[in-house]
Image (cartoon, rainbow, N blue to C red; front, side, top):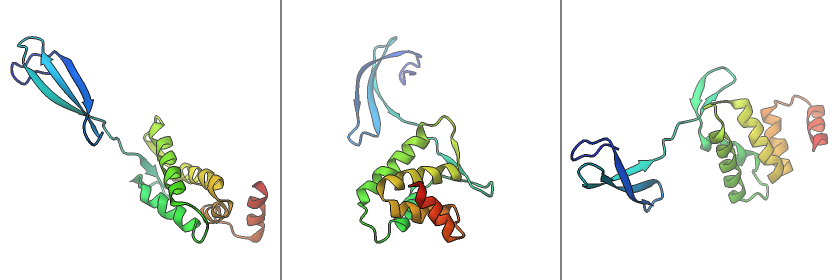
Length: 147
């Protein structure tokens, strides 16, 4: 870190602590050359996840879209909103931890179905029926038999 007083390239960290919001880290530093102290704030760089849709268009991942789809599948079901929030957090964590910053909408749909299968089987079948575009009763029966 460059010293704001003398411009020297090296400093040592004297103290580190998170800020009140836990969004940044506050560091007290001391310049090795001039000895003056200064404060820096460190934040995590948030690189957005890009979703590649079926028509090959791209858009930024939107957790609200995921929530909306899951809520629609869980309508009139005894599903706790905290369970849905946890599921969405897990999905987002899975996507964030991947090395590739681009993910297909198909992959996101699969992750949603995995989570819905754990939460509520009826909600899973509802989501799968739209996602997989079931066109007959036999498609439903085939999917239900997998459960």
